Amino acid sequence: MFVDVLLVCLIFRILNVTVCQDIDTYEKLYNDLFNNQYNPDLKPVSNVTMTITIAFFNLGLNHFDEVDGILSVSGGLEISWFDNSLKWNPKDYNGISEMLVSKSVIWFPHLTLMTDAQQLQPFGANSLFKILIRHDGFIYWTPADIINSKCAANIRKFPYDEQECSILFMAWDITWKTHLQAASVPYIDYYENKHPDWNTKGVISRQGKIFGNTSHEFVFKIKREPLYYNILVFLPVSLLSLLNPLVFLLPHECGERLGYGITILLSFVIFLTLASDKIPATSNPISFLIVFIIMVFVASAVITFLNIINAYLFYKSDYELKGFFKDMYVIFKKRRKNQVIPEEKCKINYKDIAIGLDRFCFVLSYIAMLTFITVYFIVLQY
Image (cartoon, rainbow, N blue to C red; front, side):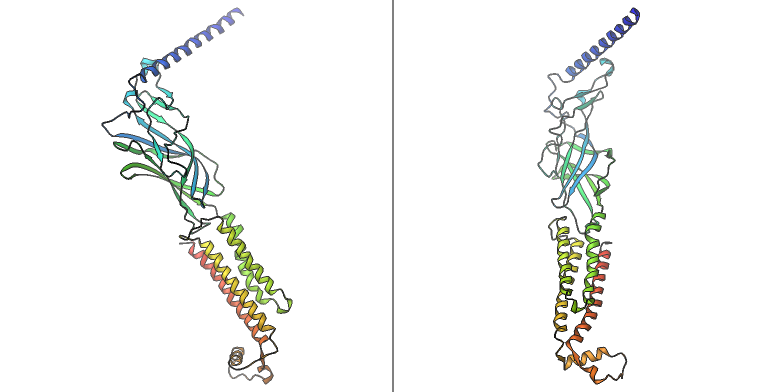
């Protein structure tokens, strides 16, 4: 029993000595690297071009506000660069090959998110993520944050639209003799949960310049899931547009024709308001869905107008139609050439005209509504 206790005490003693030695070694390495000669405000190289490598890692698409034009993404950058003054031999420090330090004691590149929707400031300026220094002088920093980037939405094919949103970074205060390049794997996707309304189709990494300054952007391609808007907007509008012409089949005596038409007309206004609340208030480009709803709304207004005219003619049945209009009606009512029509059937009143117009308007309005729906699907393919 005494031997066991002695063995345990010996093990703890060895571990304690090892930990203390490691702490002392880290402290010695830290003091050797960041002595009085190192200045975190000075760029590591001044007379040669410095290469800064970046890669973007995506933690999830939070939200895309097409009305305000803001893409919200949780993610960050893996930034790496070389500092010759921060190299050491691991053999001299008990095999320590890397260490973490606060960004307040070391120089780091100030990369600005140029598409920031709030304010321009160095990315990760307020982050507490430490910086990793390797013994060979390569330094790695991975600041992460919620990125709110400006993105003008193209809602022409809403809700079947695809958006391209750029997240643009630029070395704001170290522009000269600085080369900003993408890593061998410029984009890393770390998240598994998909956004319920948007699917990320891919991310393109490309390099460029802004006013001669080096920059790098990551272009997100996202596609909307249209099922919600198909069920909530397009399907009801299409069904109402096909029900609207049926007003001409209702008998005038029921007295509900006008109320039926006006109810459908007002329903289009409700769906137009519902769709317009989801898209930006812009004239260029305008959504095909909005154009479609406006067209069926105008057609519904014309149907309501013709319904009122037909009702007026129907209840003016005591007046006999004469002259040119009577001759035209008789011509259209003929089934065969040289057909003999009894004289009593040649007496035409406005009620007969209203019944004939109902049939004509029913066919014409149905053709118009089907045409609008067909054209809408055709233009979505281009």
